[in-house]
Image 1 (cartoon, one colour):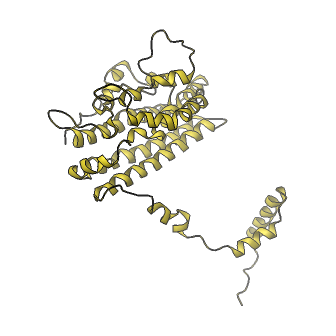
Image 2: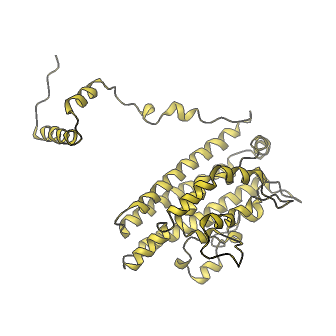
Length: 319
């Protein structure tokens, strides 16, 4: 028979704390301890739902490289989830301070650094002939439809920073629902020939427009820029925080998009006419950061830096 371990002050203290915890909720600690006795040990594969995770890759063709394509995009969305999780912590902090803000921005920049460097998988990690073949089975879906990336943009900056082509006569107090029609990325989802909305965009709007507008309303006064302004007004901004926000702005709006441009040029550039992107998005005008000129935090950049936006790293090569 196995002997019981000797009682220690530390063990007794933990039992006391458990008793207080369950008593505060009107629960019987002994019943929970009985449940613990019946429970099995946790395994790694059960904890991360390994078998379910590995079953989520469902290529639509027999081309081997499609597995690379779908797996990479799924892993990217998981990092987007982590980024949104960190921003949610910043926005939900009741007494935000520069240290907490900076530490969470460091995490976010680390995630985007991983994404940026891992994108070589997309740029160099597939055979061009295979990609151009299996992509036709994916129509009209497109990475353009990543709602999490759109959410990252919305929770990062003021909504007006994401708009383009807003008519001069529009009411400056217009609702976010009205302004949503002028989101910059909608211009990238137009048919090259007709300039009409692609099915890719129509699908996305039907699935996510309400969700995006609600998020924009929720983060109107608590996006990253607004939180920065509150800290600045309180005199609590640090150079480290500014550096992290600048790095984030550049990673999202220049480096990440430039990696996508490299991939598009490698697979879709063809003289004399470029190949249309999956879903028919206008990648030639939509992807180049120098054309978009999207900046989350303009006030953190000098006039010269803003003028050179998108040119701060070497031009992409044709591959």
